[in-house]
Image 1 (cartoon, helix red, strand yellow):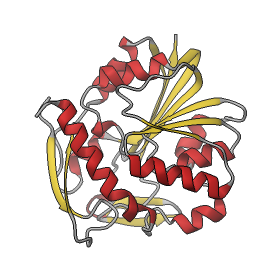
Image 2 (cartoon, one colour):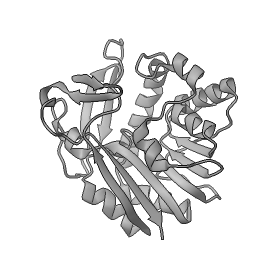
Image 3 (cartoon, rainbow, N blue to C red):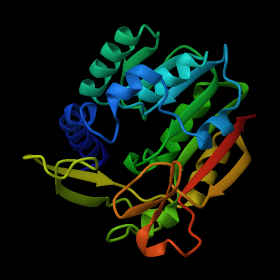
Image 4 (cartoon, helix red, strand yellow):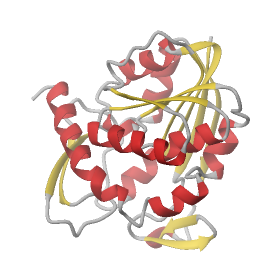
Length: 260
């Protein structure tokens, strides 16, 4: 199999996962319909004031964050490769009366005749990408000069120590995970196979720099803003791995890069 085959298999998996995610406690879609906000302080502080800004949201899933960004005043275009996710996102935005331009596409091939003030992506996105150079090209191509890319992502150190743990450095051969259900529900009666790639911080920084963007912020956070497997709650919207609750651990990072 080559990269495209792996990506196509992942696309099928996300189409299977989406109906489960829509109805899951993890995403709590009924509460979202009332509050209109799925964003956390970590990414909101990095984005700062987005009112009247044009914003491209990459890997948007079924649109909760995209709609949240639009509700805060941004003019949002959002992209995902899952047809099930994009269909649900369109229905959700119509139901809530919040306009978002949702587009079905693989972001590694994505191209639209528009440049944006901001590009944003968050939480569990980088590992699905087999080629960070193509990813960074997509970002750079769609940013205005002086525009900013904001990435809020799980820290590679956390990815190494959770569950069985992953490798730190990139290899072309992906990690493979076979499981029942998805990351929000292990009790479903379907099985999925996913392929993902580990990327070091050096690879992430380097791909952006090589494509005309200059790093202007990098910060790390010693908690996760939502509960994941084997985590305990220590404060409002702050969770730690139980096995490392007394140890200092980076869970999340923020990155901002400006288009030169």
